[in-house]
Length: 167
Image 1 (tube, rainbow, N blue to C red):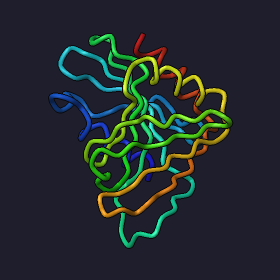
Image 2: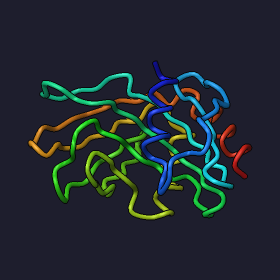
Image 3: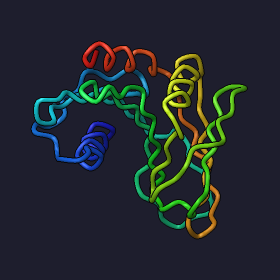
Image 4: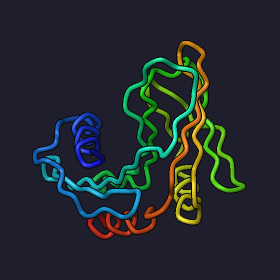
């Protein structure tokens, strides 16, 4: 299941064009899976996971993911993206808690949440490497509050795999 979900992510999130090749799995690392694919002449590497627990008073919700992407041709590394499975409330922020560290400034666009800058992306990734679990809290366009709990087991292994492939 995780493998097919990550394939869908790669195909829908590849900006601005579709991947020239289907993603190739670099490996499964406990609760995270690492992939790469070609986009034109450029290599793109990413890792993805789904939450172990998702909470909220909702009837239906789409797929939920945490994704870290490297695009060396663009000199873009450690881009953290959360896909909520619903459209976020306009102008809302998402909060991420990893251990005693809290990031409360992730901005939303549609069903995605992003860090506001490269420095925050880097701090998020460093916290994920050291952490055991990550809690992501957001609010849907309908006002429903959600709380997704991710395991960070295997994060460092998957991160090493994408970093090695996409130097």
